Length: 136
Image: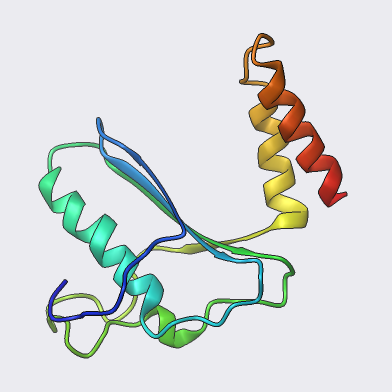
């Protein structure tokens, strides 16, 4: 990363190889503060750099900012380009950052996932169902 020596440890990263796609999930459900340029650095590392390697593919990307309540939003300083990055890069993360709430989107998503899990994988289905019930 262009001179930036900060740790770039993404909370959850889901990638697919062909076509290259990625979902970055930044977990703020514990109320943690945003690190300076954090989401921008994640975008740069995963989406910007890797998408240049897969120019002819139909790549899809998503950044999810996971919160425990709707009052937490990404701060401006987490979305902007670090001062030591190239000025040719966008000044701000150029894709929408989706705000997901544990009490809404995560439950809905998990309920949708249940329909795709085969019945023989009853342990996983039960675990997800219990997790959904925990958050109700």
